[in-house]
Length: 401
Image (cartoon, rainbow, N blue to C red; front, side):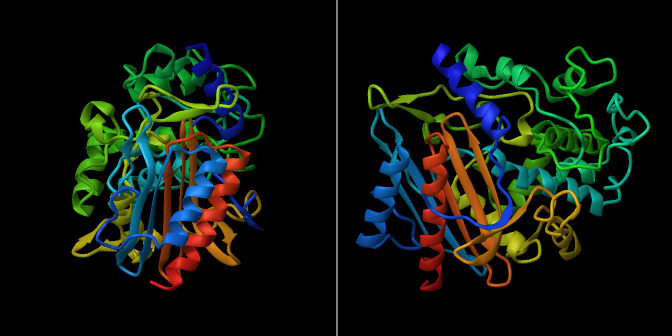
């Protein structure tokens, strides 16, 4: 179990605990299972994917291309579980990391539409406990700041390291979201540490990626709606979009269909599985979904909030998601979504990384082309390069489909 702790510690320090969210206008450059009805990969594409996975040490990967209002291609490569040689398919569930923040943002915006949350109101308007940066007690934190990573809330690596259930054999965290946030953020909370829990700059004045901030945004949904965050997402997002196999908790998930997270032991040159794990701040990245199901959310967002007869957001709300929120602090970030160049095209996307998982979604908004990549291996410098290379290749493939 010490190895798991070391890996989690490294990922926390490098990736902000549950997701390596990437943003920037700079060009992002690259350093066999059953196919869906959308079509199988050509031999050339399959060989390319296999080479890239071998380079990154990903045991398995699922990829999907969406165009317009449909999935044009989806396929799995490699293994969902090394020990059983179970293949990845387009319906294999993966732990998403920060890609899951897309769902949290949609949930918040639904309640903004309903007049139940004001993006610019003090979060204490809605919370049963008080949240204030001790260094700036008179400056309120609002939902817009939480989703645009300017809230001044920091991720405490030591706290996160101790709360991952990897340390205790896996499974869902026994700690409720509210309890975690009260201990971590509330005025007088047990875990507040000067200069660690909050940054020294005032809320809204500087970009600082915060998973805890997004977890608090998820709890706003819970506090305002009267439903647990996971129940709210199921009722208002997953069921309308037909994402019925997408779940925040292992207890609700068919584990047999979840890709096992793995790390690669560079000394023994073998893949080592992690236990399926959880964390109490789950709205920041604990969703498990397949590329075929998550594609339905991406299609809806590419089409102004609508998929077939289901509408999860109004057009104006989708526009708000993708509007640069604090251009002086980060000129490439909307509400959780980043802007960047992929293959020379301006894209909107999210990247995710955690112990044994590496994920990415992006789309070209005007062209209505999107690409999803979910892998069950650790992100790394090499893994990121592979992710970028596959993104560019599939973007080229999308043009021909």
